[in-house]
Image (cartoon, rainbow, N blue to C red; front, side, top):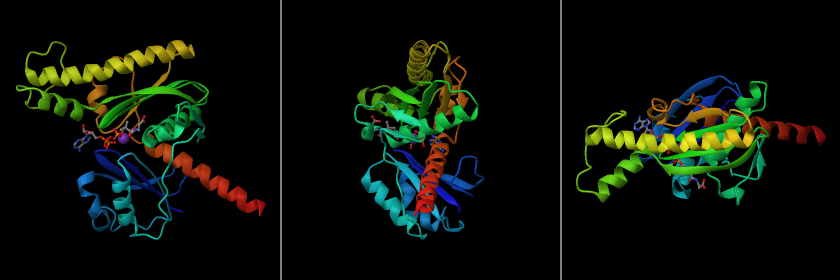
Length: 263
Ligand SMILES: Nc1ncnc2c1ncn2[C@@H]1O[C@H](COP(=O)(O)OP(=O)(O)O)[C@@H](O)[C@H]1O
Ligand SMILES: CC(C)(COP(=O)(O)O)[C@@H](O)C(=O)NCCC(=O)O
Ligand SMILES: [K+]
């Protein structure tokens, strides 16, 4: 029963085809496209894939994008299913004031993080950093309760905001350096340190709250830019959201199987 996972952020749509809808399943194919190109997915990336039998996705890019992707999914005979953030799912509980308002990418990444931590045998707190269009820094305690998290601008957003608001900051992409001596390096180093500062501050808060060192997980398209910077030991988990979708799918399939047995 192959399983198709989709993560739609505000910059790119990421997809992956798995042999089954369970954690650890073999990944058969995967890809990422910019949102501008999603209307041709059925004729390009997805055209020659073996038709999946199930699908689960998370989308934070709005209803319009979601509907356009569902049109592409008509290529196959499957019912599009989209995660809705809730008070509890996949081993976590959600401490948001209004749980349904937590970005489903954040919600699913936290489920993926929880699954990874438990698979290592000991329940530990985890700090989950997603570096995408925006950057999120989310704190999960050792019981799997989402304590809360921060949202800050991603690299591209920071750069564009500064370019639009100033006369002299339209410059090529720079490098992260300790003491920037040109505008490009000043911008890249400033943006990275702003993000790393948020991560390091939340890390300390979570460590003090939990009374032990959190696991520090980072994912998202621009994670590598941030990893280069901080002296905190990041673990880069490129598949974190897909891991969360697999865990949720397995849970859903398990529920369906149990329901069938009871009939
Ligand atoms: N191939 C790429 N081309 C351009 N930007 C990329 C690419 N891969 C990663 N990025 C970086 O990652 C960001 C998009 O990451 P992603 O996690 O897909 O964002 P989102 O989930 O918000 O759509 C971009 O803003 C850019 O900084
Ligand atoms: C913060 C986000 C925009 C991040 O999305 P991304 O950077 O992946 O495009 C997304 O998680 C979102 O739309 N959240 C809803 C608001 C919230 O989580 O509080
Ligand atoms: K994302």
